[in-house]
Image (tube, rainbow, N blue to C red; front, side, top):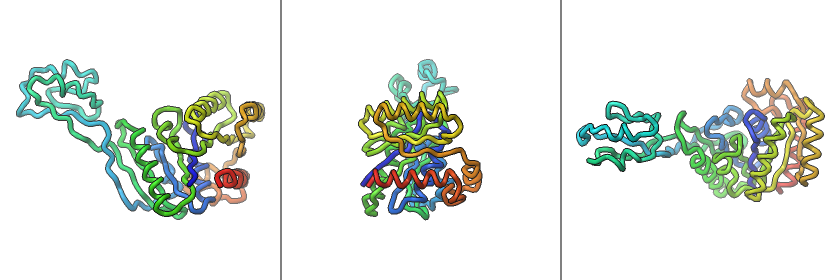
Amino acid sequence: MKKMTILSGKGGTGKTTITGSLAALSSGAVFADCDVDASNLHLLLKPEVKETIEFQGLNLAVIDPERCTQCGLCEEKCRFNAIHDFTVDSVHCEGCKVCVIICPVQAIDFVERVCGHAYISETEYGPMSHARLIPGMENAGKLVSLVRQNAKKLAEDGGHELVLVDGPPGIGCPVIASLADIDHGLVVVEPTLSGIHDLKRALELLNHFKVEALVCINKHDLNEENTAAIKEFCSGEEIEMVGQIPFDPDVTKAMVDGRPVVEYAPDSPASEAIKSMWERLASILV
């Protein structure tokens, strides 16, 4: 089984668009949407949910009014301003447990709370593992790990040879979780100065975790000078450039229609470029 995460140094570079198209072009693959804070791969793949799993992240402090003596110590010591009138605000509570420890009469319980849901689904292209974090909740990295574990199990149980992961943006905890036990990391970059900066950050992260890096330039024709700079940098670092996708209005039209661009407009410039990139990726992954 081979596993590849599509990532970038920031959001909006086209990771999900590319992942959706690669899913449509692949056969025998499992898909995982690890951008649990703002999941949107399901908008393209339209999965049918088969199983829903409650995700319990940070615990929540709950004050028992019968045991509480209203001494006010918990409200005084709470650094997140989550306790008012001897009631805990679940949105502001960060689960630090300070109030539980300092309560002189043990009137505060520390209970589990549902922070999101993980889903195991079926799409017309293959099985999919995805999730959604409840707004304001934390522990995205832990939920990403659950999504990855579910995707791996789907691949093992179904005998699938490839897992494609739509990774979160940036270089933080959720991204690190999406890179665990990954063979290749495909970095999507736009030809801008900030894009080049973010590319280097993402490549440093992949290098740190010893994940083989591949690079794809999206909308490469918008700035040929920066595109040339990216190619030169990748060549100097011996990083393989697997694709260049031109700017194409059909990509936006396909997104609005809720379909991968390779199906919405199979002969468009972007679709042809993605197909060419997939042929190269398939040879690498096999």
